[in-house]
Image (tube, rainbow, N blue to C red; front, top):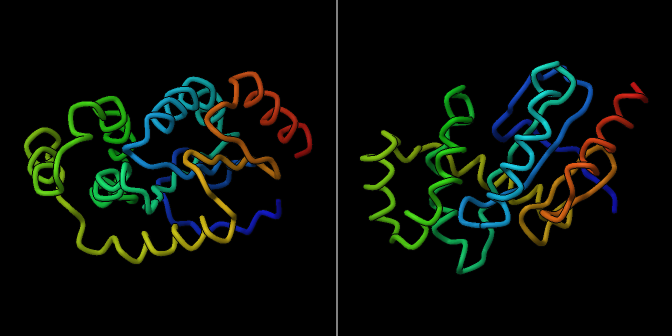
Length: 171
């Protein structure tokens, strides 16, 4: 698979000049994405803190009925707010609480429980992420890109470490 260069759009965790980039396309409503997110946190944390990895999370509005409420949830994440990383953890861990709400109920739930407001200027970023997903043949979420390797939620922590270490050794 040929990987297209990604834009800077997404939630960035870590230093922009980190030598290894981990780019993931996720949807807030997907349980496999939640699993990936927490697995990634456990593995990537030390690399991010050491300035070796930058994680870029791209919230993908995937056209699938079961993910529609996740698509709506994406529009509450401010990519420029450093607190958004904590919000992402909260939203993934509370999926079962809000995952079956209507859009209107979700908006109220996010406002009341997390102090979040729907962002008005989010559609341009959303469209760019959709275009990137299409260009990179992203069919499922999560899809994770590390160097020239592509993974799904079944990637093991050992495979993540091995891939990152190999890329760091090349730098």
